[in-house]
Image (cartoon, rainbow, N blue to C red; front, side):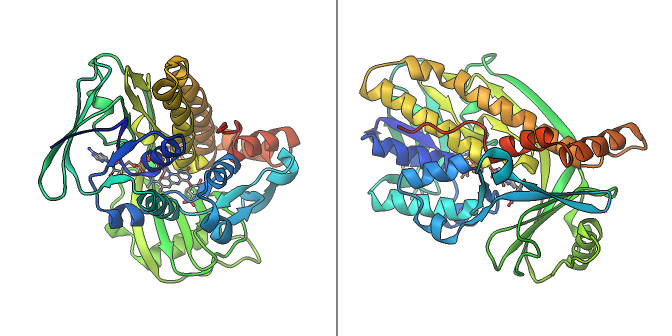
Length: 396
Ligand code: RFL
Ligand code: PHB
């Protein structure tokens, strides 16, 4: 089967779905192909924290209704170390900025519903996705649909929104893409639990036995993370052990961690990864397809949404107005934000996690930095400004 569209989008994660939505607002047709099922995409547990600019963007493009009703606004976080908990007040430090807890699963549900209601072409459970003719102005997307029919879609641009393990990045010409990366010698064990959060705002805790984070999804559902070793086996973590370790690392006098049934449990490796350039002719990479940050700074989803906001404007200029300048600037403009977030995520990660090894130098530096961030307004403002989102998203 042969068809054509203006933009072929690979991947129905937050990046691909939002791009398709933004392009439609500018009158540009797209197809989105996704190799997982709709139910899988809507249930995949990942991010939960949105920068102020991300929520403003979603609201501005008609996707804010449920987020405004169900999202939880947080005006700060707690930083905990040496057995003491300190509050950082973002609203005070940044002149009124905040963050919002609204799960990635819910954003994906809202986006899929909005795209389907608008009659968008959204194909789940495809296989053998390929991109071809990348040296031409009309490249090609090929895929096999859920019923087994092979399709060829001729288009004017391809957006690789297919995540870290997708095919688009590796389809760029050999030698073009440069990778800068850093692995960390630890992972996160994350749980979802049916119990009201034991805190009003997120707690980031540096404990000598490892990092812990208390976050949440709703007023009824808690999300918690523990630093574990890089090669940790989840089988070694029965529920009782997880709760005991969370109580141990998050505990301060006078505060109690409520526990409850654990409904989901997984280990995620930590990595920083940046591929550049994010474009080859009419193939554009966005989101996790081009870059990964460790989750400590809560930047991955926000970066993915920022990339496609810039990309949608660039593709509109290219395809509707015949102006290639914003598309030419896309990679450099996005990489500036990506590297800012990469630095912040690395900095938060290095400040809060325990490195394996007996060295005293690292831990003393971490404590010195944490004392500084919780006692100097300038240092606290640096954290707050990065955490709530430094650059505004521009969507005219
Ligand atoms: P996604 O979400 O990975 O979506 C890519 C989609 O492409 C599909 N795909 C293909 N489709 C067709 N053909 C192929 N060949 C394909 N190959 C892949 C995949 O099935 C998938 O549906 O990438 P996207 O859209 O760029 O979104 C990025 C975000 O998902 C990610 O950055 C965040 O979840 C990262 N992250 C966090 N980000 C935040 O901003 N705030 C947070 O609080 C936060 N917490 C987290 C996180 C990520 C975590 N994990 C599990 C990695 C917490 C965790 C634990
Ligand atoms: C989450 O809610 O899953 C979350 C929040 C903040 C982070 C990482 C994950 O830094």
